[in-house]
Image (cartoon, rainbow, N blue to C red):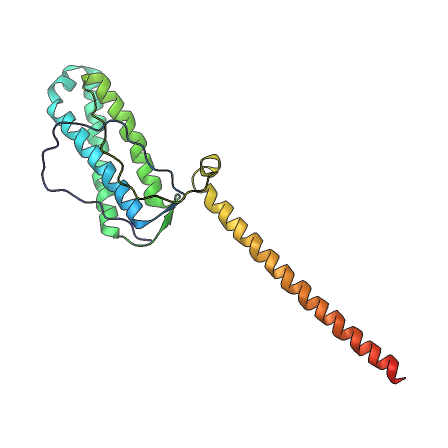
Amino acid sequence: MAYAQIRRPAKRSLVGSGMGLFTMADYSIWTVAERTDQLNRFFDAVAATSADIDRNHNPIIAAGTSGTRFWTDWQTFKREYDAFTRRVNAAGSWGISSSSDPILVELRSFVDRYNALDTRFRNLSGISAVLTAGDSRPAGFSLPFSSTLGTGGSIGVMLAAGAGVIGLVALAVIATQARGIVRVASMTHNRRRRSR
């Protein structure tokens, strides 16, 4: 399966405003547009927070051990996230995917790591995040019980329901054919009686 392209914007001023905690959509089925938008929104959040962190490098390091540890953890996160975006871009983009799509699962892991690091940065620096821009995702498809069933759970239910419907149709066809066979056998048996 191929994946959405993460845009790499030209150098632009980020107005010095990290976006704070990131919330990932919880769709059961993802379209290319939804996946692309989600990846791009997260890229923007990481880029904006990274700009804040770079501008505040000295105060972070001056915070002592916790600041140094944060700086190291953020650099590790950025290096691994950059490798992730290169893999996604190399894969290209087409088709729909489920919530258990490997790229979306990996993105969820990066979102969790980013949120923890963003909180640490805000606590260390005292710098507040600005509100994020409006969500530009198109409406997605999700079943009401997706959150109860967990990642990919609703896909399993949909497949089971589909198999159940196919099973019922197959039983109806078999029952109809069996009725026809019984009717033919009965007519043949009656003809033999009459001929006697």
